[in-house]
Image (cartoon, rainbow, N blue to C red; front, side, top):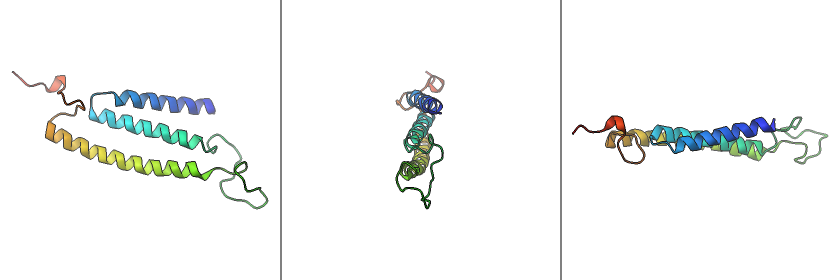
Length: 121
């Protein structure tokens, strides 16, 4: 299970970095989204919930009240908060993408026009 989770985090991170280095705005936004998913999986896996079996999520009578017997709720709360913030960030970036494309006429992040948008002499 640990190997599959590590591979998933690695693939998401690698794909996100590759997309961040692309020249188009939409690809950069998708790269940021993939990186946020990778970070969410990493934070969630640190809570021992995804990798542990038979851990109680809520306090039960007769079970000692320590983290050795329960799932840690902090990574779950952090992941949920990161998902909400990531959704808002993606919506904001899409609005900025549309405004930038409308004003500049291109969606390249480096400010140069692409090969298909070059002006006629």
